[in-house]
Length: 201
Ligand code: ZN
Image 1 (cartoon, protein in one colour):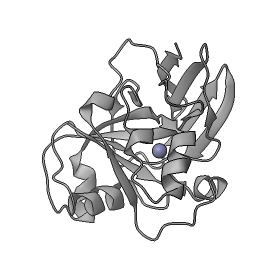
Image 2 (image 1 turned 180 degrees about the vertical axis):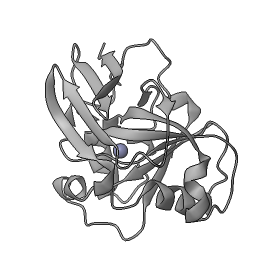
Image 3 (image 1 turned 90 degrees about the horizontal axis):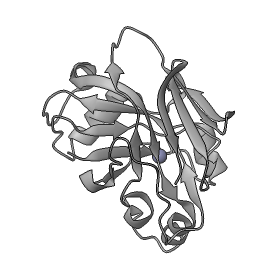
Image 4 (image 1 turned 30 degrees about the vertical axis):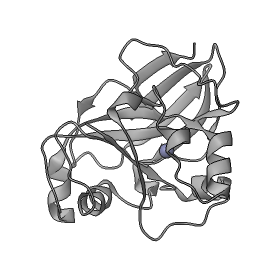
């Protein structure tokens, strides 16, 4: 499996990092080794002094597919949850300045954190997401504010990569990203439901 991640998918977050709004999805991957095993604490990598939380709605795919149309795309989603696209922001900024790929800042071990998956229904309407850090809300958003919808993301990325059963799609983060530190407690909510509750080692 792999994690397909979308950058700059909420306008206010793109702007808070000084980026332009994209006219097509900004896509990067995390490998299976980036997935934090269930029950483990977040470990801060030694190469960064500024690891940021990015709370995101995460979709799990039910079956393999390529070149999916927007009309078919939602039928591929098996389950959803909230997750953290942990980002070594200092290293990412350096890589961005040099015009280099972001993987070292984005795809390190344990950088993909996912909550408990729940069933997905495309009839439910927009999904809300929220992250609390040490019991204070630091990020919140709603999927209807995404620049590219779930269907557009799946259709677009499936033109470039084969989608496989169990692949995860991190659909982008709303504004309010910021640093995490040893001892922090992070709680992620989807539609006010607590699905992720994890500490930083
Ligand atoms: Zn992200």
